[in-house]
Image (spheres, helix red, strand yellow):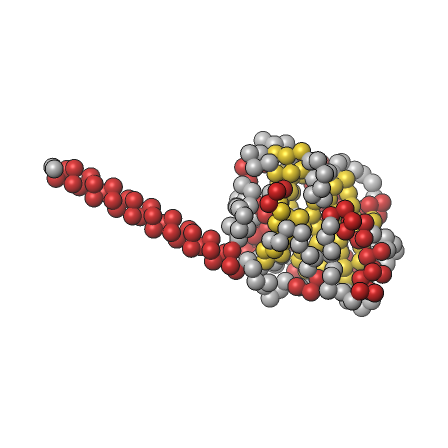
Length: 268
């Protein structure tokens, strides 16, 4: 065997060894992320987390989620938005990344490419502007759902802004949001990411006398006022199978979740 052949074999061996080591490191990193995603973070209000119908709850720095593998998105994303979280910081928009803490494998962002749908945030980047890492983790693919552009930039954006207004006015609200992942839905991409026909947002203000408000909005362009989409939490629970605030005392939970009265919340 010539020296040239021997050197070639050594080079190939080194390349394979380096590739194998890098692959091992990536697997180790994923294991760490999956394990860390099992543990609620210090700034996650675990008391108000909904139940999961999928059995896969992931905890990130600024929000928690329940991932639905059949629909390749979260059935809910939950987080606390306090007045101190509100910021005008203008962080650079990062690329979307696959959430490696999802043990079943989160959808790839490429499913959305040329689909005609926005990568609609469930926990908005604007709600996590208090530091760079909290902002950037909202660009994980487990935190997005396919949304029509006019819906995403229209009524859904108006609702997100109203939530920030309430967070400032009431010094903090707890938010749960997601698409209704039921019935026959259109899908996009090779992984068949479901396109919800409705989106919901549920809020609880636990400062002073507790109050709730819930919105159920058809996935379409609308210029209607937000209060026309107020529904009871009970009605969204019936649609989704999710129990939103199971840790509340039963009589209080039943009372708050049955109402669709928005008069306790300022729409000015």
